[in-house]
Length: 133
Ligand code: HEM
Image 1 (cartoon, rainbow, N blue to C red):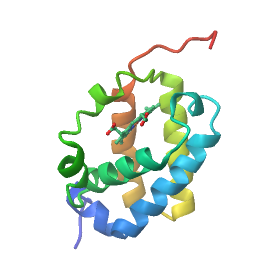
Image 2 (cartoon, helix red, strand yellow; image 1 turned 45 degrees about the vertical axis):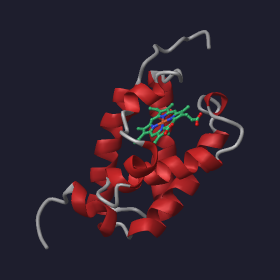
Image 3 (cartoon, helix red, strand yellow; image 1 turned 90 degrees about the horizontal axis):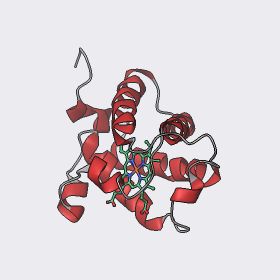
């Protein structure tokens, strides 16, 4: 098939469930080490890994795992209890890029995913940076 990758096929292009699983594992390993992100996440990443696995699966065109289990995504609303600052959005995206490196997600699929994740990450911002933080 030729042409611009569409969200309905990204999931398959990158290798489906195994790839998303690996991506999410690497991603939260980086989040756990990030000084800006660590404090707003729970001690135990088991549940958030599972939710993110379900979310990214459906976000990139796989089965609707997140909605089936947790209901409508409403991601911005779900992030409101957590202070998402511009700096944290940048850190989140940096963890995701490194996780993609580790998972071997390259080329058009990577570009497409990063574009969508960047838009979504900026949309999650709900608190200004506090330079005193
Ligand atoms: C912009 C920076 C972001 C920060 C700092 C951030 C932070 C967080 C935090 C602190 C939680 C709650 C963890 C918990 O207590 O269980 C969370 C939940 C979640 N985040 Fe983010 N997030 C960001 C962006 C994103 C993006 C871009 C996505 C999707 C592409 C996303 C997907 C999710 C999902 C699926 C959950 C679980 C929601 C639920 O079912 O409760 N996040 N995030």
